[in-house]
Length: 454
Image 1 (cartoon, one colour):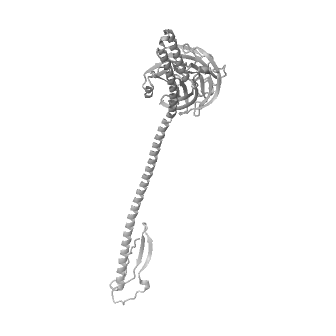
Image 2 (cartoon, rainbow, N blue to C red; image 1 turned 180 degrees about the horizontal axis):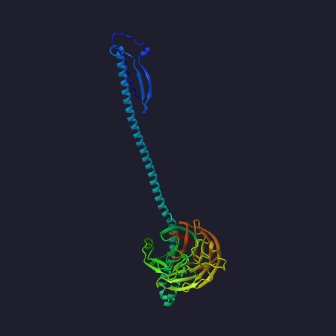
Image 3 (cartoon, rainbow, N blue to C red; image 1 turned 180 degrees about the vertical axis):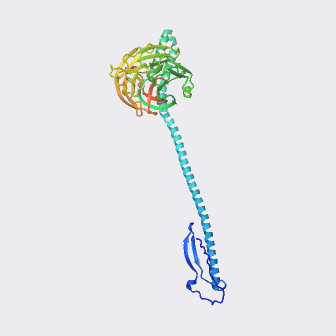
């Protein structure tokens, strides 16, 4: 607050007038008070009339009062300056505090983001490692079978040793026939170990992400162990290009070794490579084509009698998947549907050289209600959907011409499967899962029969 002393004017006459006594109304008093535009107080002080020439006590009181008013005015001014300075300091501190709060909040958010990112990375690593557990379990099962096989080999070795010791008792022809018999037993034992009934599907393991949503990729189940070529056919129609990779590692890295241009476009994604040749459905027809990778020529063509084509009887996802070609331990197969079987699935075993139909089975499962299918050891397994939640729902055994409903779930990781095919050499399912090339491991229940069981 600032007090202002308004100037006062007095009319004083110096002469022989007698001295006058000042009454109470002639003392110092506040005339008025108000505030200026800045909110400061303004006081108007009325001084009593006096003789300017006199030096009496009233004059001294006036001077003292003026000094007090000036001192008060200066003190108030100093206080106002300090208040303004302190207010600016407080405002500055408030801004700094707001800045610190913002920084702390940012640090807290960054910390949460970093922790969330680190947690996601760890979870992704765990998700990548999780499919290895059933693979290891499968290896343990295989190790047991190998142990049994090694025991059989030891038995055969003992027999051979016995033959060698008795060499003098047999002529060459007898010895030759005995060796042939042992070789037949060995091959028979191996064939009994490779076949079985599907019990479980584990995985998948993602090999690569490439191509469109629909396509096919495969290896040859009859190739030698050192031949690991991979073939890749992107999309389900209007294409003739087949890409070849020398190994799975080259496929993952994208190192293409050769490109083939087929004489006819294909339909669907259900092709198969079998014993060095590609078998596929010719576009807009029910014709099966056998194409040799070695010669680059078509070796055989044959129409599947009454087979629907061009989305007449596709799987649930469509894509001209009417005719599905596949191979297993027992040979080459075609799965399709006909009007004669009311649109239900038909299974035909094919002669690989001529594509002649050797035998046919009619099932009661609608082709349009099937998500995908594959053959293992002469049994057709059918999934109930190509989307999330799919499972192996139905199986048909061609050996007994009987069917059963099953409940074998598998993880459709990328939500849309357009190709699912069994590879007997690797005992695995190859799948095209929404632009991802993945592999499922299968667990088979083995029943080894002896001559006494028959």
